[in-house]
Amino acid sequence: MGEYPAGRGSADTGSPDKGRAPNAAKPTIMVVYGTRPEAVKLAPLIRALEKSDLFEPLVVVTAQHRTMLDQVNRVFDIKPEFDLDIHCPGQTLAEITTRALTGVNALLADVRPDAVVVQGDTTSVFAAALAAFYEKIPSAHLEAGLRTCDPFSPYPEEINRQLATRLAALHLAPTATSRDNLLAERVDPAAVVVTGNTVIDALLWTVDQPPGVGEPRYGDPALDRLDRDDGPVLLVTAHRRESWGEPLRAVGRALNRIAGAHAGIKIAFPIHRNPVVRDAIIPSIAGLPNVIVTEPLPYGAFARLMNRATLILTDSGGVQEEGPSLGKPVLVMRDTTERPEAVAAGTVQLVGTDEDQIVECVDRLLTDLGAYAAMANAVNPYGDGHAAQRAVAALAHFFSLGPPAEEFSIGPLAGEFCGGRR
Ligand code: UD1
Ligand code: UDP
Image (tube, rainbow, N blue to C red):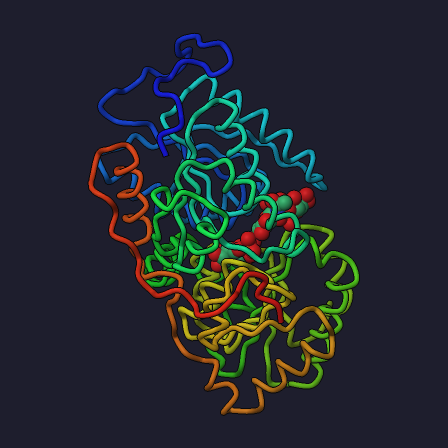
């Protein structure tokens, strides 16, 4: 900490501020994000910054995602001050990086906030952290220290978050395990604070709301009928880039077999908007009477559907964290995970993208009550609902406005988890 130059002059030119007037009393924190999961996990922090009196938050979206991002902002009633609107269909990694980097850099040069907050491991995160570094503005990385140590799994997220670590001045690690990953990379321990994951703050807030907050019911008649049906529900999400092509086609075939083998089951699949994902999976499941494919759901509705589900099959990072908190067995369609805590707790199992393996594991949980009960434990290794407050306290300490933040305490996992392989 403390290696960033003081003051708000332009990094490249040394010129005084062109935009926002500096507010000596309240540091301006620019929160930058681009996709659905970042929006979910930053919403509690934005709210906590607004409440804190210590900071002036400024919300910027790159809009790497468009509809899926706007959906979350609506649920949490967040209206960004700046929208870079970079989304375009079929965007490449290089296009996202260059558009986000150029857009955020220009905004930083103009506004000159006191710090930038980024969250997670998307390309918007890396680009925003890099832009902040170019402007010599410190960045705080929320959800720092998750690692598989395999550059291609998840791709490109593992490298995005490693680069964010290199660029950040303050590292807000969700768990003791993620803190230890950072310390193993020789990150200054004084710059690391274990906060818990803000996804649990978002989830607890959301499940506490009356049904229909933000949106009426699920917004889909077939899903609405699930509330009056007590049969098993398999909730599915999938989107990972490293699974594009044959792995996602295998997921589609597995779902087709599961739907055929379990007539009483309903498979609910709010499918990612990416046409690459849809084209790979939908042909195998279209028209099946017990498969409900919908548009992505608003966060409140999705949280209720997780609660309604018997089990969850996913490759999502966020859903891997939320499912265990709701006591739902989660089968993860990946070969590695950077979230080993719920695997260690027994609620999450890595099943990869092999068709037979997915079918077998779902089958077992639907037919073997003992196996199901062993996984259906409500555990909260990722947070206690107060991560955003700790993140604000950590920022306050960073700016010498408060004492060291109290940390989220669940002990580190025993053993070597970097890689988290099946
Ligand atoms: C991105 C992140 C990934 C994160 C995921 C969450 C990168 C490289 N990937 O992956 O880390 O886990 O978001 O969902 O940062 N699309 C729409 N509307 C939307 C969103 C996406 O049409 O609201 C379509 C577009 O055709 C777009 C494609 O989906 O080209 C892929 O979106 P993109 O952000 O590039 O990657 P994701 O797979 O969503
Ligand atoms: N989510 C949602 N609606 C959906 C599917 C997921 O609101 O239809 C939420 C989910 O609860 C989690 C987040 O989106 O908080 C995860 O996003 P995604 O799986 O796209 O990204 P990842 O977490 O894998 O980066």
